[in-house]
Picture 1 (cartoon, rainbow, N blue to C red):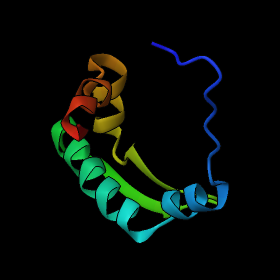
Picture 2: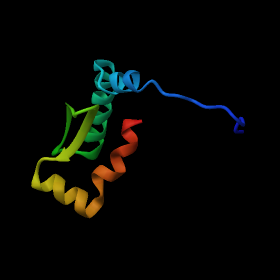
Picture 3: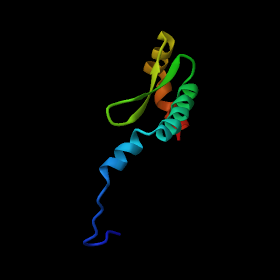
Length: 83
């Protein structure tokens, strides 16, 4: 239920710091690795820092992995492993 007249003001600097922190990277990296493992052989998780946040990419590195994603949606179905 919404409270009338209530406002929330985010501390943008703190949010930016949180999104790019090592703790966030430490949380996201195992999630990406679990997704890559659940998707099968040929998938790889890579953690990197963009301009303002930490991101994890799970990509197909082999032709077989690309085919598994194209035909069977192996990576798409593995997304729940990261929860």
